Image (cartoon, rainbow over all chains, first blue to last red; front, side):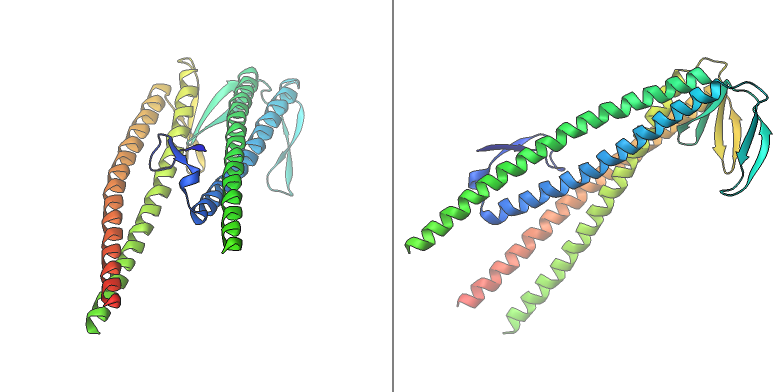
Length: 160
Length: 123
């Protein structure tokens, strides 16, 4: 059975004939793949959280932009202390774009930013989902060959 | 008998060396991953800055304060940072090659020593 796998040392895929591997190596390979699946799944969950976060931010800006200047607001100073204030400009937001940079945007710009982020992360999510599927198929392949070999070994032992 | 002991000690020493090398390789991988992450983050910042027009207002977080930055300067700084990360990552990659060949040599040495032990045991 042909089996292609990319290893961290060699980014090009190389075909490994699973049938040539001894059971221990097959079991080790299966463990390696399962560890990768776990890592990918954790990353998948992180992406979903981030998507939800950006989506909520977008919704929040939409709500903000609908308000009028001068509107009374409560501003959180700590987790249990608020102070009264007034909305200065419902159409300006500050966006954290990463590595310590912040940019001022209109509320439309802010909403657009959030939408773009959601799109970007959703695309990554799909790619990752495909990779997880592929890894799961590979685990099944390895398991299949491993089982075959174990059965072979048992049959040989029974004959002796 | 002392010949066996001497070789066994050599195996131990070489195994220890191998383990140290493995630790170094692992550290290299972790740092390399950090650089990749920092590089992608900076890429995103660069793209976002490019979408802005020349009058856009940009701030940099310096400690607890947001300090206003000129957009041209901000773009230049991001580029400089990305360049720095790239050269550091390249340095790590070269270091990794060296470590990996040392690891391989160490493995071969351990194999050879173990074979020697086997031969003596068979006599």
